[in-house]
Length: 238
Ligand code: XBP
Ligand code: MG
Image (cartoon, rainbow, N blue to C red; front, side, top):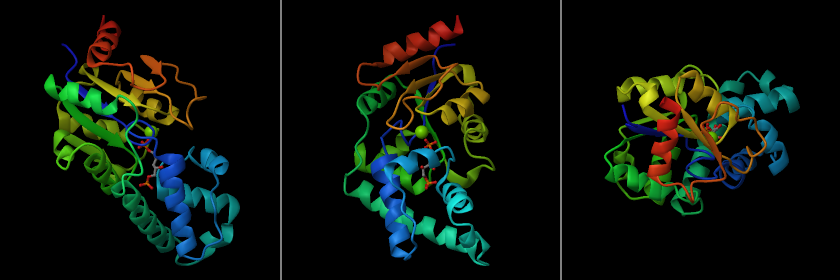
């Protein structure tokens, strides 16, 4: 069978969202809550080992502010901080401050024209995905994707395969007839555990990670057309 579907990761893959998007949104939420937390670009790179914003804040508190977790309302405080962070992040997306990475819009357009199915498999919050698609592609761009798997809908976030398995079940396409596009080692592990052939586009924070098992490791999608992706997939299958 030929390639039937492309499944995109979001953060680091569709757009370089982490350093200048999620990170300042977290910091704005901390400031707003008068919390003495600040995540600089270096520290944030370390915190990215943990996927998911709520999980990342909990991990940070365990290491640097255990007294925060001892509060009886710690879970609720994390939920509130995360809701504020999402509000700040969505406002940045709506203001057009987070562009798509090179070649992403072109590959999506080619895949649509060739009637491939499109899907999203991400750790981030659903609202962040739909707002990014709308702000950077077209008002109806979320409808271009047959399945959008995002956030807390599965028990375990990447590197667990849960989100890719959730998307594959709804797509109804066997993993070997799909291709995942990811930017991180955690994302690659997740996709490979779901038996998906995976292409990596390295991002700001993930450039030095181990991508053993990827079909290809590219700097970005600027020079990659659908025919290239189909060829990579074909070589893997033969
Ligand atoms: C990236 C992530 C996300 C974002 C924050 O996942 O780890 O957690 O950093 O998003 P992916 P939320 O590359 O799989 O998209 O704060 O909404 O969780
Ligand atoms: Mg990613």
